[in-house]
Length: 187
Image (cartoon, rainbow, N blue to C red; front, side, top):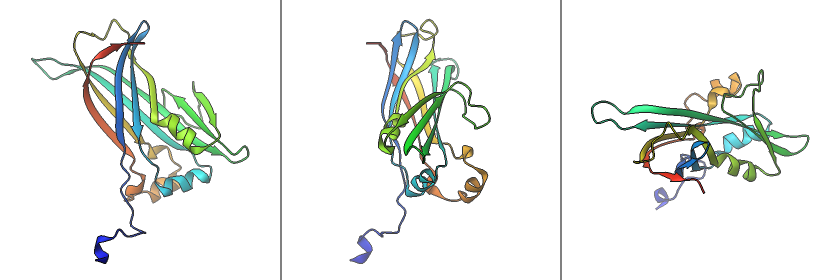
């Protein structure tokens, strides 16, 4: 009877899932919107509480089907997000950029501050208006094949944490989904 009960100390795998994918065409291009559902493991939350930044990456690829050869990649984009806790202000800061965010070079980033971790994570979970390309480059006559990936980027952590993560599945927060999506008119 005891073997049927879950163990309290046993680590549950942390899964992520894509709950929404949508391609939209506007005057200035074709955009991908996505929603990802995930929870951060306690070990990641502990690192965040110490003021250490964690990084997420959302990547999308758009393919044109070809009957005579492999599908042709017509667009590839990425969005990098860095989430940090600011202990002095007791607020959460989210930096968003099309390029990897490093301390040496911040580059062009959008910075947002949040009062709670839940608000900040909600912003990370919603990937809005990820520009896939010009409207003239992407046909809208048939559904497009989209490969979407979202992951916690542990390569951006400080080296001591990277070494300690070897063999720990707790830090594996990632999801990949391929779907054929119609290109909808932007509302």
